[in-house]
Amino acid sequence: MIQTIRGTKDILPGEISEWHFLEEAFKRITQQFGYKEIRTPVLELTEVFSRGISEGTDIVGKEMYSFLTKGKDPESVTMRPEMTAAVVRSVTQHSLLHHDPTLRLWYAASFFRYEKPQKGRQRQFHQFGAECIGSPNPESDAEVIILAATVLKEIGITEYTLAINSLGNKTSREKYRTELISFLKGKFDELSEDSQNRLEKNPLRVLDSKDAKDKAATKDAPSILDFLDEESDAYFKNVQEILKESDVEFTVNPRLVRGLDYYNHTVFEFLTTKLGSQDALGGGGRYDPLFAQLGGKETPAVGFALGIERLLLLREQNKVQAEVLKPDVFIIGDASAKLIQKIALRLRQKNLYVLTDLLRKSFKAQMKESNKLGARYTIIFGKQEEEKGIAIIKNMETGVQTEYPLKEIADFQF
Ligand code: HAM
Image (cartoon, rainbow, N blue to C red; front, side, top):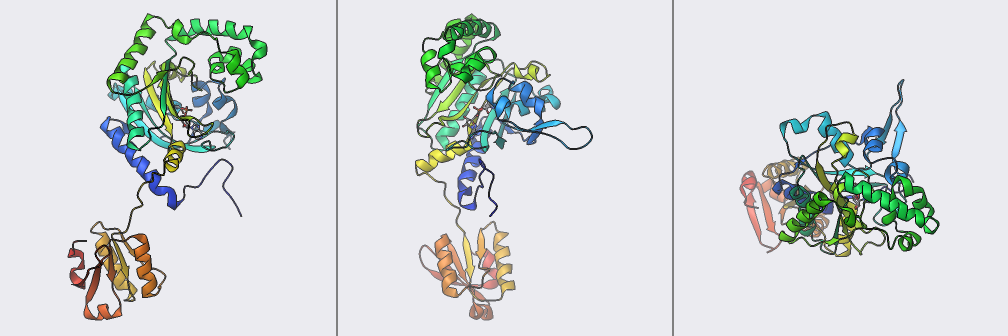
């Protein structure tokens, strides 16, 4: 039997109501916040991510699905591991900011990372995310965080904490980086091999390593918050004030640095203790350097992404599941198929969800099916009814049966 590739999953019809429920919530809430959907190709030139996310990160260094295209002039292309760099590419390519100085964009899409699969971690996974592009002000950082928190609330997820931090502006970050490297060099022998390798390239990442050795070695590492200059400090305080005023609870975690290199100022993560080692439901931050990194005009921007599979796992654990859509009408009986199909179509044209039996099962079996599916009405339409030109409409809740002229059946108030 041929099976799905490791780390990928089918989304089966039995699970689809949950996906639809989440997607509808994203659509509704993003609309309330004025965000418009953007869709970009799954494949991008590799440089979108290698320049955008940076070579020193796990995503670019180890996890990308990249390959050379066929043909005379092969190009290195990558199946997108995330959306932010792709959105920046698209906004620049189409000069979208030209017409609209603040762009509010959202997406729900699939992404690819060659990671070790485990609960809540797949090689093909889905994110819902939003990007607010064009504003250099803390209210836009707060807006995207509030948007994410609103989504979580609306889909019934409350068991998380929101951690926020500031990586400051470039000057603050560079000062901190120098200090941190010198601190880490002093602890070199106590660090894991991964962190030793990262020390110069990506020292901030050493701080959020999950390795026990690294955790112990960096216990007394300097805090970025002590290196924020006045501007960065005021910016971060401003974000916090807006969040507080909107009743969004958070904790400041000075070790939160995130796994992508394009961030400055605010970074944040929605964390849960309910999913084992995959504790991040989502994350994001401000990424002012990214536009220029990808060859565009310098542009301030901030955004986030939530992992859809992780949201679904939490809902499943909490035993909250979206309602499965039930048929309005199930037509049963042994009347001629052409008439049954004609009635079904007429009712569907009235916006009703109508099912018919396609297996020519017995009357009893068809009635059982209608019951099982929870149809609101069953139309009984056998040979006898066909001869009389009527149908029997049964209200499945009350059990009341009404004879109705076939010709007028579409006028019945189902
Ligand atoms: P990220 O932290 O890499 O951020 O991913 C966001 C979320 O996607 C994670 O918190 C997690 O829930 C989910 N996720 C990531 N990898 C996997 C995986 N292998 N399997 C299942 N779920 C996963 C970004 O991608 C940034 N683009 C977010 C952002 C938007 N920053 C600014 N704007």
